[in-house]
Image 1 (cartoon, rainbow, N blue to C red):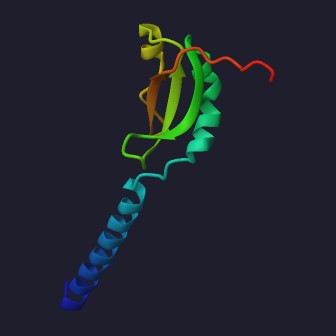
Image 2 (image 1 turned 180 degrees about the horizontal axis):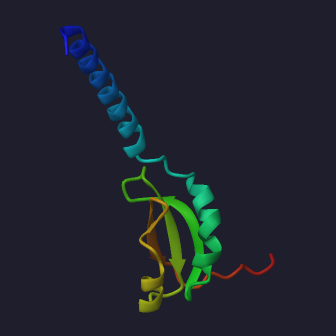
Length: 107
């Protein structure tokens, strides 16, 4: 193979190598999280069906900025603790024991 042929082969390998790395970088990048309100809407019925769960809402972690899903429990129970996921679609799930939730009487 003459020097032009070698140069062409090296150039082709270099271009293909850069293209492959570029595609791999796009493929391996994490996909963005869905909107947290949509995640709550997709899972609220399933969470509310767990015994002792009295409410679910969008909140933030103790750092004051990281969004999370909050699950309110009437009382702590091992069954509820096992049934509630720690993570839903990339968002942390925090359990709070709030007690029973009842509507207020008429004014």
